[in-house]
Amino acid sequence: MSEPVLEASGLSVVHQTPAGDVHALADASLTLVPGELVVLVGPSGAGKTTLLHVLGGIQPPTAGSVRVGDVVITEAAEREVDRVRRDDIGYIFQSFGLIGALSAEENVEVPLRILGADPGERAAQVRRLLERVGLAGHASQRPAELSGGQQQRVGIARALAGSPRILLADEPTGQLDSRTAADMIELIASIAHDDGVAVLLSTHDPSIVTRADRVLEMHDGVLRAGEVTVAVS
Picture 1: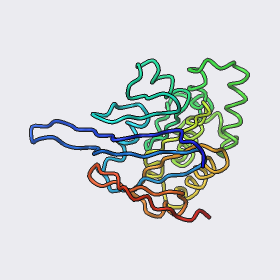
Picture 2: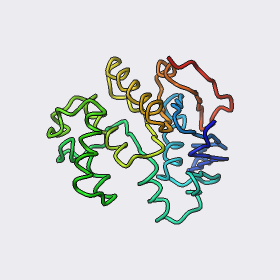
Picture 3: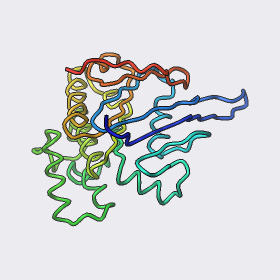
């Protein structure tokens, strides 16, 4: 079995409120390895987004640790955490998160500009990624000119622009119809299985588990210890 690209241990997030402490995460632990699609299921408010934010270095935990490669991002300096987020982790948002004033190709190019990639290399990478997600003919269109499924494909291409080892997807099909959602899951599964990326995808849609290598469940901030292995077609 491949070495984990991400290891999380004992993650807790506690919010203090006038009514008392709210445990958004409670002692959650997991690993991700290259080439697997892990699906995280649970109802709205279960803590799925909080877990993804902590794993992606967007939000610090109250307790616990996250290691990405050789870097413990929960202990590292902010500059090092930024580097890990830039180089190792791609993030797909439910709300697409595209910049409305930019075309599809310009949205995908944003991470490559941040990385300081050569202009020629940027252009080639953007073309390759738009072809990968089936949008080669829509490069010049802005988000408002694209369907919801097309916008999410741009979001996926952008998340892959920096060639991450880890892809975190937060309810990526939440705003899509069932047929478009099924196509999107097939694309994300191919990114895991064909490209060797470790993918963690959160959802409240139980039908998505049929494409998973592993299924994790969350309820009230608790990540269920039992990991159910399902057949991948």
